[in-house]
Structure formats: C-alpha cells, structure tokens
Length: 365
Image 1: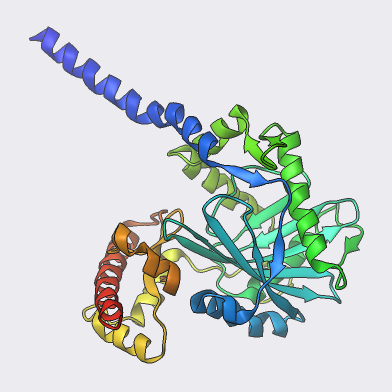
Image 2: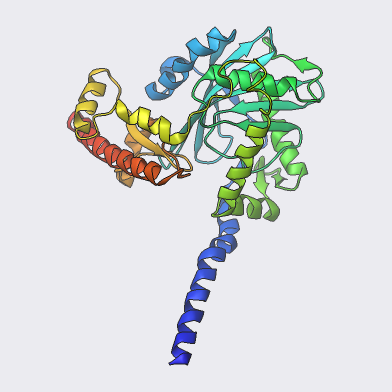
C-alpha cells in the first residue's frame, strides 16, 4: 500500500513538473521559429478610406482629446511587414510647443486578436526617450535608452498626458528635448523603429540574417521571450511593471500638479460602469442598435490581449473585417471574487452578442 501511495505521489510530482517546466523547454523552440523583425521598418501614410472602419473609428475617437491637449493630427499610418502575422496601424499626433508625440495604436493579427492603446512620447538629443501609455500589453524586452511606463487603468488622455509631463519633469536625463520633424516624419519614425531593433540585437536578443533581411531571435532571445509570457513569470513581471509606474508618480497627488492626474479606476469599478450600459439579459437588443448605427464590431474581453468569445476559427475573417470593441474593466488579473463574477458575466454577454451578430452578418451576405 505504501508503495502505491509513493508511486501516486511521484506520478503527480512528475506531472506537475511537466506542466510547469514543459512550456519553458518547448516554448523557446516555438517562438524562435515564428518570430522575426524586418531589418528596415517600412512605415507609410494610409488613406482613411483604406482603413478598416473599426480601426479608423478607434483612432478618430482620440482626435478630439488629443487636440484639446495641444496636439495636431498628422495622419493615419501603417507599418508594412515589420513582424510576422501582425498588422499595425496608428494615428500620429504632434504637440509642437511641448515637443511631445502622441499615437493611437491598433494592432491585429491573423488569429483575429486585436489590441489598442494610446502612447505619449518625449525624445531627447542623447537618444533617450520616455514613453507613457495605457497599453494592456507588457513588453518582452527592455531598452536601457527607453523608459516605458504603463497605466492600463487610466481612462483619459488628459490623465495620461499629465502623468507623462510629471514623469518627464522629474527624470534627471530629460535635459534637451527633440521635437518631431514635420518635413521628414516617416523617415524619422522608421529610423526610431530600426534603432530599437538594433539595440535589442546589441543586447543579444536578435541576430541579422542578411540574406532574408530580417532580424531573427537568438536562443537567448527565444528563451527570454517564451518564459516571460508564461505563468507565473508574466504575472510577476506585470506586478513589478505596474508598481514601477505607480512609483514614478510619487508625490504627484499632493503637488497640485493636476487635481485628477493620478486618478485611476480599479478594473472592477470600470467593469461595473461598462456593464451598466449593456442589456445583459438581452444582448440582441444591443446588437440591433449597433447595426442600425453601422457598428458591426464584435464584443471582446481583455486577457493578455483582446479576444471575442463565442467566435469559432472559421469566422475569424469576420473579426478581421469588422473589428472588436473590448469591454473596459475585463482583465486576466482578477482583483476580487466579485471582479471574477463580473468578468464571467461579461464573457457570457459577449458570447451571446457575438453569436447573434454572426447570424445577422451572415444573413446579409
């Protein structure tokens, strides 16, 4: 009997080790074969009519607030064939007086996932840069010449802008700001993207395959990329990343810098507000109203990225065509039991909404 118990314990122990360490072993092989970065970035202007309506709408939604902060809209941009299976679009804004750049970014991939965020950037003559964003995504690699602070719960560009100005003012390296060239804008953006890749290569994450004109992952880069995306390392990095961002605002609340600059809403409160505007028991009613307003986007929930529940693989093309509208306050970071319950309700709503929307879309073909 004791031997049987021992064998069972060893079996579960071995199984646990496989579950924990298996992905750490297999992951680097997978990411190394599938990830690369183009040797030279290829950013281009794109006409608004060529954009997916959902992406154009997301960018346009930020125009008014950026402009109220002194930014001028410079145009819609796209990055061509920079990374595999990914399409990146962004609206570019410039504040000439403060020499600050703003972007509204929308990223989609061939799996039908989409993510959007806003970023505010200051650059300096020595190559240093400060980026402040509301991105839900945690970067894989660090760049010693870039300081990046994420505030995924900040719900307004005004608050994001105030956070950025506070951080820049209290950073000792921000001595000689450099504005965006208005005569050579695209070349300047391409150069900045190329420089970022070169820095990552210098740190040993990538090597240049000159024949294919691509930077490919080294084994060091593959191991780091794979493991930083896995449980529990991603959650640990997420915690420290958000703590660093919060510490960067130390003293701001009591400084009269801005009455609301550090106000962020916990995800649970944000989700409550989001769900108050939904017909949870009858999502079809919301679908019909949205279609009447020519909004064909699917409803998504946030995890590591934004995904649409209830959509099968065969229908992913419709997501790429119409886009996703993500429910604010959903997250893969659970704040409490009540937050978990609300997320489950949001997923249930999204599933019903998306299935009914699919029926409507297919019936109009």
